[in-house]
Amino acid sequence: MAGTRPADRIPMTRPMLTAQIDLFLQALASEKGYSTHTIRAYGHDLAEFAGYAAGGAGSSEKRATRPLAVADIDSLTIRGYLGHLHRKNEKITIARKLSALRSFFRHLVKHRLADEDPTAAILTPKHSRRMPAYLSVDDMFRLLDQATDDTVLGLRNRALFETLYGAGIRVSELTGLNVFDVDFSSGCLRVSGKGNRERIVPVGAGALDRIQVYRDGLFARTGIGMATDGPLFLNKNKGRLSARSVGRILESLIRKCSLSVPVSPHGIRHSFATHMLDAGADLRTVQKLLGHKSLSTTQKYTHVSIDRLMAAYDRAHPRR
Image (cartoon, rainbow, N blue to C red; front, side, top):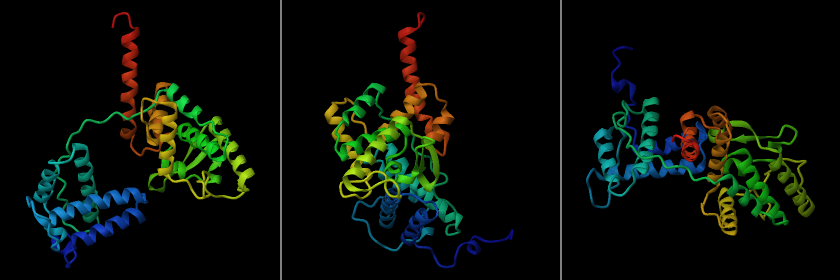
């Protein structure tokens, strides 16, 4: 009704801040399908804010744990918290923490647990976008060629990074692959990305060959074949390989081939995107391959390619 008052739209009981944070985190898992890592990060940032708010703006003492309702939070509380963060945090960190607060309060407004969003009038701190670390094509090939061990684990490691680079997928998507997600006839993988969104991505013959060699070796050694579904990449205990283990394996390979760039598993994904754009792929295609929801997320890779383009121009053009 047109004359509905805020009190009619908000429950009579005052929603408590910490309880609503817990419910919000549950909703991220059940409704949004966010990963455990992402939910943990949201939980940490929101708990930090709740601790600050409970202690009151400007308090230098250990923060109190007095009960605090959602309605007790206003824009002044948010601004005070951001000022508190500015003392010890970089702008990119502050922006991330503010983003968590925005998501939380929008959730509360949407579910009529808050009358208004206290973050609505707060500007996000501007920060310089860091260029993603990536390997040159030559360094990428050096890294892949370093995995020459003919043991089952060595064959797995080569297949791991051939697949990671060949498909440009996230490390969580890589470790989440199952046997039946690989379609050798079409040369594609079925990947479960952020929010449990599935997509089909090409992976290339080189990676598929390495997967087959690894699984053949695994079958000969353990009897674990590809006739039944299960994790594609196994650890030494025959369980699913973790993302953390992939990072440790990559660190070992980087040390062996003495790469100057200490690239992470995500850096291999950056390398894939950069090499695709350098070779002439259009931005929309790369967006679909990477599984980015927004084109703006993919656009950061164009900065790398444009820098290379300008360097080539400066070297070659007669009237530069």
